[in-house]
Length: 248
Image (cartoon, rainbow, N blue to C red):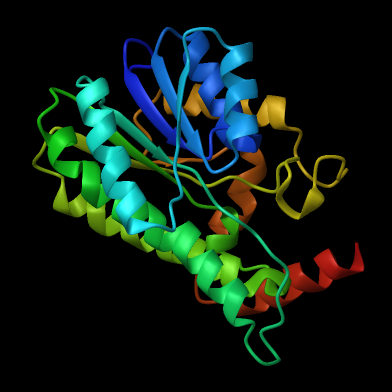
């Protein structure tokens, strides 16, 4: 993938992995537009990166997605890369009654949002000489973290959706790639100072290296063990993984 000269729209670009990717791609000479619901985070990111642009977007709102897609394609006609990064992660308890608010907000943000936004921009992307859709999933889409069962389920769904989308677009100018991060030090689960999580800066640096290749799945070294665990014995591995996580 060519990492310069693109026009890139990143959801959830005001913090965490989204901001890290936005800043790294901005430094490579791309026009980067970030979005999110927290205006203060967007403004702070743009101030720190002159030339970057921002637009407020609630990925749980289909009408807002449609309006932002129209604005994007009008204001940035060369838009050729979409990074579906926005996501939320909350602790849940799959063994008890469902928390309806948690369920709906997580699925709407992590799954319906990327699908709707991709649908809103796909015809524009097909018209570009070269275009890419990058969906940010998680290694938890392959080996779920039981205490965040809904989040893990949405990431498994995003992986499946990415594979279907890649097949559908195989004869077009649009490529589909998937970034599957390991545990990274971000605001998710208040992990900024979590010693077991990968620091954000090296994660972004390694991710950028892999993005420069043609790999469909963008995996840093810390993600490869869980990605490779998928198979007939995945259930046993998942039980062990969760026991180790809870034990600290």
